[in-house]
Image (cartoon, rainbow, N blue to C red; front, side, top):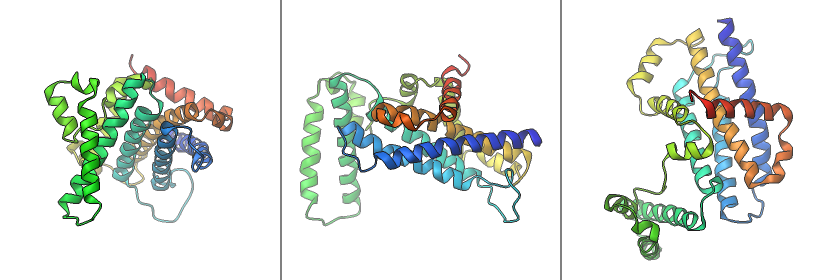
Amino acid sequence: MDDEVKKYKLAITELEKIFVTVAHISANIMGRQAQDRKQEFGSIVFTKICCHCHSVLQLVPRQPIMATTEPELWDISSIASIGRALLESYYSFFYLSVDVVDEDMEAFRWLLWDYSCEFKRLQQLELIGSQSPLLSDLRREVEALKNTLVESSIFKRQTESVRRKMTGGQMGVFSTNTDLSQRAGISKKYYKLLYDYLSSYVHSYSLSINQLQSFRAGSAEAVHIIALLARYCLVYMCFSLRDITQLFPDQKLLIDNDVKGIMDDWIDIARNFRE
């Protein structure tokens, strides 16, 4: 048990250190005049990532770290579900604000993103029977975006099934997390491991229910699992922190040697996992 507690303390301490720096940067860049859409989008999603991390830190039990008489909720499911949201947020952040692609591909990514967004907005409003006078304007906007989309040379090179998904609003991202992992420097195997495990709690798959049935609050197994989830969040926080300083280079000054050491260690683990 002592060994598990040490690992738990280390995971939470490192996550807290990264969070403090991330929160500082988030506060600095929010409201700043963006130089382009990548910065504007990136600052918003980076703050979303920061909020997810804050929620995880609010949920992790303090009992293994400090003496407390207050009852605590060992909510493994919520921590895992927020961890999955953090992971997904990172890939959106990387996809539109950090990944380096040519001008045509960058423009196509934004076009597809915007079309999918407005298509789904229109779909939701129509499903609830909205009578908004702005609905007709939204329909025209969706139609205009669709016309631009289908005339794109990148769109025309896709298979019929992919084109149907795009025009049907089912594909707002022209990539997969697996491909983005490789481009970000994250081992595909590592991404797959984290994604599958976190998703088991999001979807209440058998593995997660079995673990909830077997583990007890305060047990060595529960301490181990929450430490594991904290480390999973820590990895994507380190990549987020690395990437936000590419968008806002002046923020690198906020990363001290201790935080940089944590980042380097976890980025290296994620990059070289079982390679």
